[in-house]
Amino acid sequence: MDPRDLDQSVRVALRGLDSRNADTVARHLVAAGGLVDDEPELALEHARAARDRASRIAAVREAVGVAAYHAGDYAEAARELRAYARMSGDDSYRAVLADCERALGRPENALRLVQEALGTEPGDDELVELRLVEAGARQDLGETAAAALVLEAALGGRPTPAALVTPDLGQLRLATAYAELLDARGEEELAGEWFAAIAAADPDDLTGVAALFAEEESEDDGDEDETEADEEFVVDGSAADDEAADQADDDVDEEQPEIPPDVVAADSPVTGTTEISGVEFADVDFGDVSADDIEAEVAELLGETPPPVERDHTRLFQEAPGRDNPEQEPPTD
Image (cartoon, rainbow, N blue to C red):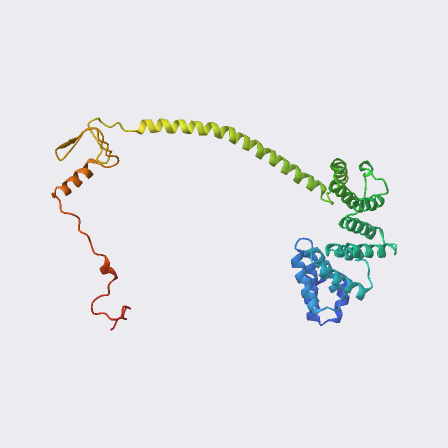
């Protein structure tokens, strides 16, 4: 950051500081000015650092106020810009101060500041800003019709999209605000005509309307493609599911082994005539019990196999002999 990039008037104001301190403050101010559009939060940090070193320099308070406004810290922005106005006598930030009041939820204060500024015959650029803030404050209060009258008057009275041929940036911004108001009021067709006229009169897209149109068209195309893809998936997916089900049935039929009639699985249910321990059982259904299980049970009843041993598990809950303390003793060396 080169302090020489700073405006000459600001460098003059910094001469009252120690040379090393003045150089540091200047670097912070240059950084804040370069970052305010793309990284306003970081710009605000640099501006605050400059204020910590030179809070009595009007240009420093201005830098903090502008950075805070871009970063969305409207309370600090209003506080710092009022301090700048007192210290410098410059009242060019009246529209910004009024907009801060809007952002802080005080539209009545915003309208008061706008009316005070309008009574001093502001310049053309400031007048555009004041009218935009006034229309916004009216909308905040639910006075949509009054907001429309403010913008229509600023556009020359009874404006039409066809009249927007070679406007300046201020007129383009007023027209954009008017189109947005029409859209919010439900007059979408007329709002679309205004947006189209603004995009045609703004080849450099300083208002951002052309980029907004392109983004909306891209979203619409994406929604259509997604809908078509979903419909194709439903149709193709149903056919694919049917084919998969048919193929699975064929695979099951092919993989099912053929069991010879003279082979019976050991765990298969015993039905019909069955011989167990030399005794035939005809037309008896033993359910899920196999022939081996029945034969083993018969052998046990006949005393041919010893009965199972019943184990005593109560010993697991008894203390070991010779141990008074159930807790584990620590090992000894």
